Amino acid sequence: MQIAAVRSLAISPAQLTDAYVSAEVALSLNDNKSQIYVKEGKEWVPTEVLAEHDKAITSIDWAPNSNRIVTASQDRNAYVWSQSPDPLTGRMVWKPTLVLLRINRAATFVRWSPNEDKFAVASGARAIAVCSFDPENNWWVARQLKKPIQSTVLSVDWHPNNVLLAAGSADMKARVLSAYIKDVDKRPAPTVWGEKLPFNTVCGEYASPAGGWVHAVSFSPSGDTLAFASHDSSISVVYPGGPIIRSIRISTLPFVTLTWTSEDSIVAAGHDCQPVVFSGSEAGWAFVGSLDDTSSGGGRPTAKAGSVGRLNSSAFNTFRNADTRGHTGGGEVSADTELLTVHQNTITSVRAFEWGPGGTVSRVSTSGVDGKLVIWNAVPVGVAGITGRLAGTRV
Image (cartoon, rainbow, N blue to C red; front, side, top):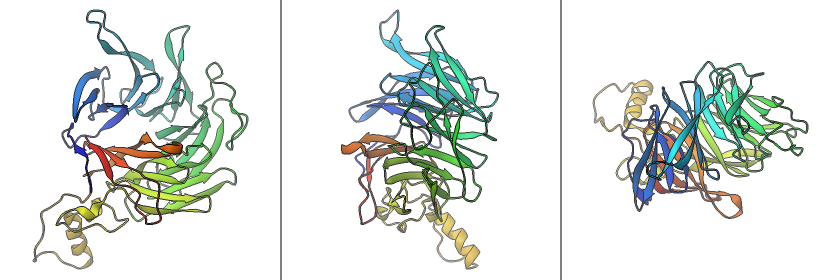
């Protein structure tokens, strides 16, 4: 495994919630503060602490073009942070604007729209708050998507047209909804998801194959395909024309996050502690390999292709031998509980980090409960199988 640079910014265990632009990253270490780090040479230097929330921050997103940060929290509020000069020093500082979401449960997830003129906040109130700025009154207005959501919304993702919104929730459904706002959006062109798209129109509803929570949803780069990951250890890819749904059942622990790297490739990660790649088309999808090269683990035993990191620890192997072979003692038992993977706990976020020629994603980032932020190469899928190797920075 080739690591270009390693730098620790978080003390484990600390769940990272992250968002970034260029050489800056916004992190929340499982508390009510967000920290801004700037890369100076090979070092990551903290520059500011954004502290307004009363409870833990659950999600952060950074709009790269408008340079605004939105944070969502268990305190049922969101803040939009923008830079302005300090009247005393003249230095650019981050100033918060409170967004009243009108929800009575914690906010769970937030994402800016592609045009960065609105954002969606998922919540435990069986609703999604779609927020847009009202210049006349100089505040952010929240409109809620409610029907037919029956439980906590765990993730959202925007369609490239800035109108459609995908949502995954604990009612075991993935949905595509219209978040069209008349005074904000232009009339959208017809898509494979529908033509007439008034606010809260349900354009598609898809159940988890075996009834698991839908942890993550993501539109393909074209917006014509939807992928979602469920707690039943499956990934489903929806082609709405049929509709045709291709489901991949895996023998690993469930994935909780995923992203597209091209129209025919997906990177997913979760409780198995390593990002893995799936490739396919409307004809079918299949597992390709892991971005984590566990074969270079020194003198430690190596992981098989497709096996999970958490289930390759010596502690689990000891338990498995006791369960399947009746080995309860004797012999040499290793006390090493370190996993063969870079991440040592659940990966909670995987995002596109850098784009290459043709709009394909060349690098992705992962962050998780172990307090690490890792950047990986995600080269185009090859016939041989494994798609990339660890490339950049571990935070």
